[in-house]
Length: 504
Image 1 (tube, rainbow, N blue to C red):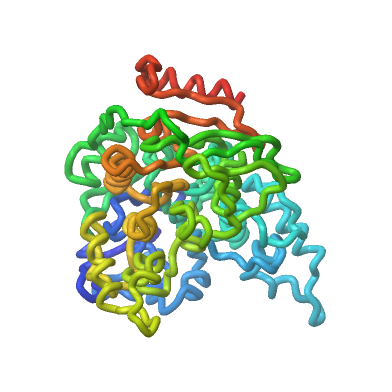
Image 2: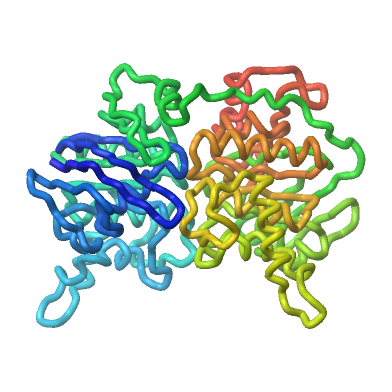
């Protein structure tokens, strides 16, 4: 039995947790939910020994415990699957899964690699990770890396397993498999702490849910009889809004961006589409269907073997992200903000202004810090980024505020074309509403041309007004949405069924 008693924790300028008490019973899935910045990550880091509380205590099996480091938690069979990807790219899948247990495989001073590979394969199969365990992690998708981390935690025989946004990059099939696995391990007496913004998953797998808001515990409730709307009301203190975004003013003239006959060996063959001025064009499909890979070709991060890309009707020669930004004013908000979208060890001002450093230099070529700070303040205010100021490190921000910073740097660059990849992964319902409205306003009010890549079907239907469906590196269908371009107005169910038919 794990008890959290009157835990309080503060950081400079912010009270992260205030007198929080929660009980976690053996053999249950206990969800912890709340908006970004509510205190969820701080609470689980205290339970893992990563942070020390300012007040209160952690009680395990009736005895207060002092956790000085994560190793202390591991010694007590408390393990964490972090939302940050933590793998070693140049090591094998098996080595990453068994990373903290290699000493178990020592015999006469040598490591038994055959046993390591065999045991790793068993845990990889448990989480439906279908890659060779002897292969390197480098080059695997974010979802596959996340499954490696889950397999690593399961292999530790934890009594208490803490999972922080474990499904953020997983496909529906991988998520269903994981939820089934959690049901199985809880029947073996394991306590699972499940931190997620996906309330449908919370309702599907949890026995109890504890809701945090602004560092305080709002309450702990049994899931039985609880609705999504009730959880949302506890999280944000009001009912969730259903945004009726309306119609866009899409230019019917020359395309802002057009791909013709794009090909890449082993992936794409003769792919084409057009994006118009003021349009939000959705790219929908399962992870690995080719959506992000096509975006990387468009911005010059990946090569193409054939075909052409046109910007405003003119042939574009894009060989790098710098070409995309400085020659054609096209930006890309990465789905993996922590690895590719942000410099976590740098302050907010650096992350926002990095795309416009060339405008902020003095005559000697030095960046003017006052101008950098002013630029950051402008977009922090515009996007309502919650922080102590432009000098705060991005690594200390909540997921939703990190995502806003990732978007802000491209807005600072005044891009005409924006590719936004999985904009609301790991963000709470309030931040999701804000980001959806922000994307809409960029197209509606500022005439930006936007490609929205998302695995979230409600999101893609709510925000995009034309949707391209991807499967096996092909565009297999196009769906026109909610009255745009003469299409009749339809409900969510009808549109989602049409998308599903293309994926069948």
